[in-house]
Amino acid sequence: MVAVIIIAVVFTGLAALIAWAAPRGKLTPVTNAILSQSQAAKIATYAVCAVTFVGFGVVVPLIFLIGNHDRAKADVAGVKLTSAQVQGRQLFGQHCAVCHTLAAASAVGKTGPNLDQIKPSQSLVLNTLAHGCLAKPGAGQQAQSCLGEGTMPADVVQGQDATDVAQFVSKVAGHP
Image (cartoon, rainbow, N blue to C red; front, side):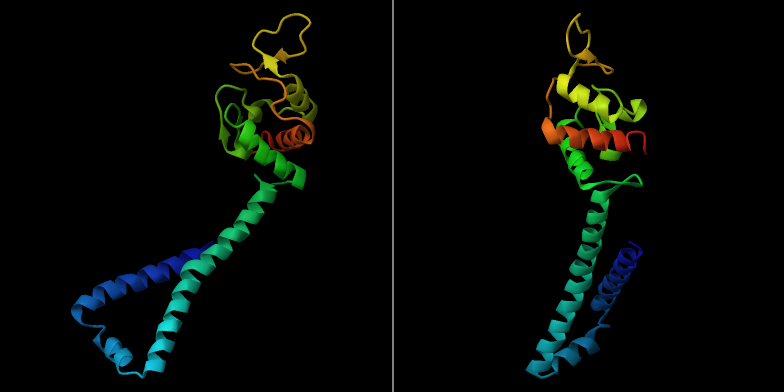
């Protein structure tokens, strides 16, 4: 990340220098040198400039972004995630983040309970996903009492997806 900042500062400085020098005629020697070259030398000069700008302006930042993206998928709040938990994180974002707060998923829902505060176990998450919860469940209903403000339908995610979400939530809940 430091390298990207350094590159950005260098290119900003070069752009400012060119913006300052061009109207004052300070770039005339450079322009004359380029214009007095042979056609092949001009093409080579322009190619080197283009490759340099594309390399530092596009390729280097992309390398850093791709590297950070891969690392971000497998590491949340200092917690290493398995591939199933990474899948659970994506599913949580799609199905659960609207209602629930969970810092590791950047979720700030207000309807459901704050999962960072209650730190649910995997079995509790699986049970709630399977049966849902009601604000005031009646006697004999499988749904448990909700800890938040609303109700949660049963089977929001099912099967392996539910297991992945439960693994993810139980692993990261309570980690900043």
